[in-house]
Image (cartoon, rainbow, N blue to C red; front, side, top):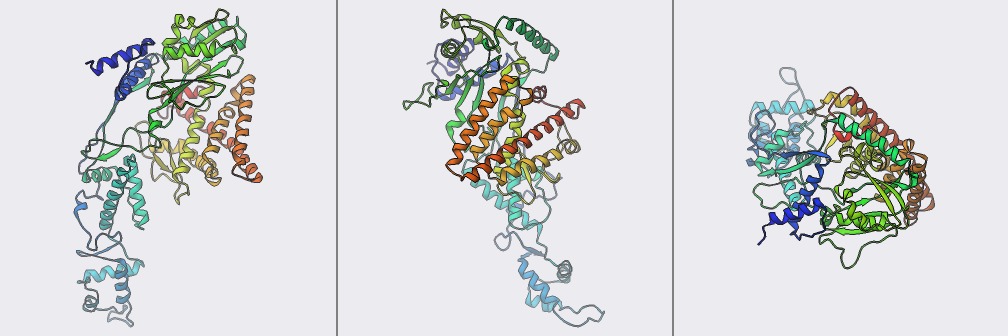
Length: 596
């Protein structure tokens, strides 16, 4: 019997070396092998760090006076209502207390000291047995003066804790993924639903103690993280400059329409978090997704763009299939796509050979080519490429040095990167509108990682962080968040934008937001794509809307692009200022995006 570790090692070696030998692995071993391959290939561009999230250790926190870890064991006298008033060791319904206040103050005349005459303690105790001493009458006097009956805060917290426990168990049964911020939102919702208007923010220590009391913990996940190379930036910049200089010299011998850049880009159908809250001691933790296959299936596209600014009409696509082959029912086919299957969406040497055979060396491509690619090892295998090269075709290959692709590769610097900031802004607005279909009384913004913050004030989500404090956040981002919510989230919510319209908006933004930086050739390509998107959008509208509605919706969508462009420029200026004045630490991806 061959040990799984040996089979995985064979799989990894074949994938790295690009051999066509197939190693059959069980599904769980396949996933492990693919992760190792990804990490090893990442070393061509990155350094590798090991990162992990620690298991939360729960302990009583005396710094939080609003929470007693043992309070769940206490019972309210009436079976657990949210609003009750405490008189000594008794909990009384507010309506009954208000009745006592009214009765106590309903007498006429003056007392011996000149004040309003009140009913005696004996009379009150006879009618309201919970009123037993003078301090209880003083309590009634406070309620009369304030015009309202105050509910017992401790009892309300017991109610919220128990109700939260019920709701969390229901969510875990549905396999919904939960984090601490979800518990906080649920607790605030319970508080609001029951009209408990006292100020309580459900601190981190309260959440931790609550989880401890209910046997809920956050599961630890250890993971490897590919970290962008931050070392020797001067050296990388020099390599980039040298490559560009040599590429310009080489390109002088070719027509611009004979020079092509090729670059892979991977996509996952459904992104999901691998961490959630779970009942302590459970052996398996399940998560709910729109489609289980969407969490394990991915795809890679490999387009070609010429130096003349034209996208080649054929795109090579690798779809991930569990067995590495398409199902018997077949798959979607289109004249401008060459689609192949793989056990992973990661391209292999065999896929590379198919790409050259069916796309690069096809009759639609020039006979003499200059190809510019990244440092993927398979591009270096000239013998494999030559094995499918027709006699009438010739090519030269220039490979961008490792670490430089994000800076100088055309498909990265123009096609993929130009829309990254704007996509981030659009996704934030879309997620916010989906999470809050009806705008809350106190507007909130939800980000792509599920975190939220208040929009009109800094009461939630604006805490200090390691790299930036709350005051710095306010100076840089408060006005921007307010503007994004009003200018983008508002229109999306008012027009009830559908997912089809949202996809069309993102497609249009690819070209519009980088328009000023594109060459005339690229602008022509963008124009063709825009027209195609708008025609498709109109076809969609015809099935659902009248002519007037179609014009109004399409007009609103197009007008919204101007606002998105404004927001895109604003966030870039904000990050530029932060970088210039070292206001906080900017990650490498953001720095690369800012180089546009």
